[in-house]
Structure formats: C-alpha cells, structure tokens
Length: 339
Image 1: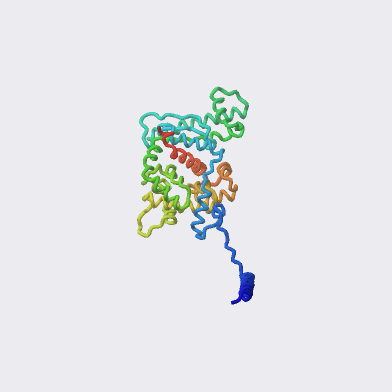
Image 2: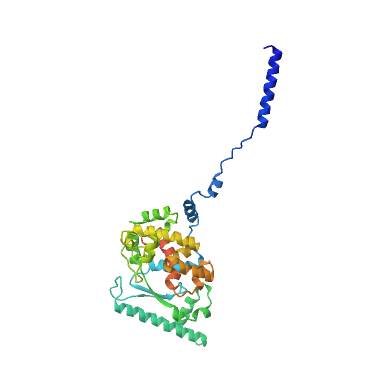
C-alpha cells in the first residue's frame, strides 16, 4: 500500500469509529449510596425493617412530672425495709406523711395483728386530714402538726386549697420491699444476659429485661390473685396468644419461654400504642385499656396518668411505668443502692 492509500485508509477508519460512538447508547453507572443514605433506605425484609424501626424508637422517656413517683418507688425498693410502712398520698407520691416501723418480727407476709396496726395508723391519718380540711374551710386556728402536714402538701409549689380537698380519701400505705428487691437482683444475674439477648434479637430495647423486678422480683413460681403465673406473670389467655404450646405444658413457669412471650407481647403493644410508656403500662392494664385511655385524653402519657379515670385504671396502672423506670435505674447500678 502506497503512502497515499495508507493515509486514505486511516482517515476512513477514524470516520467510521466516530460515527459508531455517536450512535451508541451511553450507560451511566449509579454511585453507591453514602452511609447516611444507606441508613435511610428501608429493608427489603418487612420484619427486619419493623424490628429496626422499633429499636430506633426504643427510648424510655422520663418526663419530669413522673420524677416524684420514680423517687417514691426507688425508696420503696432500696430504702424502706419490709418492717417499714410509708403512709402517703396516692396521687402525689412525694407527699409522705410518716414511715412507721412495725413492732416485732416482720416476715414476708404480715400477721393479722400487724395488718391491723397498719389499718389503724392509716385511719389515723385519714382522720387528721379530714380535721385539717375542716379547719382550712372554716379558717380555724392551726397547730404545729397541721402546719407540718400543710408544708408536705404544698411542696413542689402546689396550691393547698385544691389538694386538701379529698386528701383524706387519698391516704395509702406502702410497705418497703428492700429485702425482696435485693433478692430479685441476686436471682436476676442468672437470667439477665439471656433475657437481654431475647429482646435484642426481637428488635426491642434490652432494658425491658428489667420488667420481672416489677412483676415478680424474679420469682419463677410467682402467682398473683388475678391468676397470673411465673416470673413474667402471664395469664392463661395471654399465654395462649403470645407463647402457644401444643404439648399441654404450662410455659408460664419457664422463664425463657415467658421472656420470648413478653417480647412478642411488647412488640405488639408498641405497634398498637406508639410509645414505650403506654406500651409498658399495657403490660399491667392491657392494650385495649390503654387504647381507650389514648382515645379519651390523647397520647400524652403524663396526661393519661394525671387525668384518665377509667374504671380499672387505678393506683397500680398509674404507677406501673414509674415502677419500671425506678427498677431499671437500680438494676443498672446496683452497687449504688446496695453497697
């Protein structure tokens, strides 16, 4: 090939190559998502996504309004012994009129005489508050004891007139449980790691493993007057739903089977109710009961505690979440409370 033909051949080759490039389809390869973008993408597995979302929402709120109740239960669990009884206002738990030491040997269960002593002292405080209410209503002179009671009622800046009305009907007695709670802490060491693993693998906050401190003090064979059984205090109906067994064995007495059942229940309750304070309270009051409370007064948990007056929403239900918070704080640092 002579030089002229070679140049012509090269020019034609270049022309055909450029034409082929212009007519081809350009393929754009997307950049991989950044770390932040990846975290925002939903999982293709609905169960995994549901678990992850539940974990991310798993903070246990501690409103300031609940702090007096949390402190009250912390004292009940760690300060007051089983031989001590606190007489207090059942709505304003920072109002403690007296902590009385019971006479004689005091066991886990009180004797008939000891119960009568508690009843008489409770009645005494009811009378004192009724008299004080009458004195304030009629502007009668107050003695030193009256003024001391008034100072308790007015703590935290509360107005006396609204509190003294009905105070005599709000007197309640609470026995200390220091010995029982400490025993529960000792027992919990055998279960805590596995319980936390169960909740973690269910996509739930690990500290839900503290609930047996409130339910049973980690007693595997605990039984309640309402028919709840075991460390996690399942009723027969709840057990059939959340830990069914085909072999006829009552799994409520199995702490680990019950923990798995509790994880299923609490996951379901959280999905239905939308926050942990309400979901945890439903463990005592039921999902339907807490849903009625939300429908009546809204989703503000403090407002539910303060204003909801459902027929079964009594002292235990109102205080259940505060008890859980107190137990959780103690279990996270037991040496601080039990040196």
